[in-house]
Image (tube, rainbow, N blue to C red; front, side, top):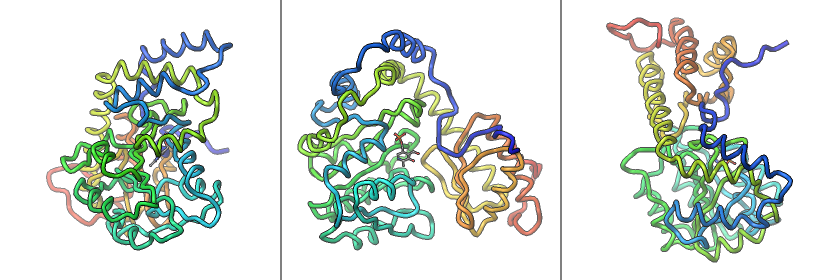
Length: 349
Ligand SMILES: Cc1ncc(COP(=O)(O)O)c(C=O)c1O
């Protein structure tokens, strides 16, 4: 029998349970669970719009950001159409394309794990309805800079919707990070996708949102399931939006841990690039399969793409230390240890 994982680092979840104030709001909502939620989530839409400083007709709420992505595909794509995305990416995109009967057009990442914007542009044709960009990218954590995004948007034909998936945007602090909302006015074919699952730590509650121009948002809302947004989840999101200072401090801690893990692994010879999400990406030809085996032996569940890479979600400090201890064993085993580490123990911490 397989023992359960000691550390669950495979799904890019938050290591933190909901804040006490958020749990309190959820308990209150549970006491009213015999009542339906709003037919459509109008109050939450207003709340999120105010938070994003846009008008409510720019916002569509869905069952996780993946739910909003599905609504978009349902409203603009079908059999005979295609959806383009960099590959690898978030596993849901090929599934969503298939659900609406559209073809998938995966475009390989560049050698350094970035989305190949020129190749994506070259892949767009009269059948393409949506092109997905993930920023920061899952699983590699790379960033599309503001300049690169603007140039990309200028070249995408108007019949193609750009789905800019910003599920991890709160973890990106780079000066080159685009401010996507400022681009909506010039690009009516842009939908920015965000979620309460990651930085806000509410993955189980399934609330995400899209931001776009009112015409596009109205089309996507037509696919909205009546009574589809759960009242307990709504209460949790509203309470989270009242606690953004506390939540930001949690995100700061995750970022500090990500950078610590990155630096330690770099010191031990892994060829990793700075990541901008809540994860660290190890890539072949570094010994990612050995690393995966070592993590499994330590009962750490990470996301392993055999022969290709390993995505480690940033967990608690204890979980991250357990990762470093498990991987110290791998990199210390001879050929893989490329650079000597001076003045440090080989045991990572
Ligand atoms: C890039 C990306 N987008 C969206 C999601 C899904 O988020 P949600 O929980 O909001 O559906 C994930 C989840 O891992 C993701 O990695």
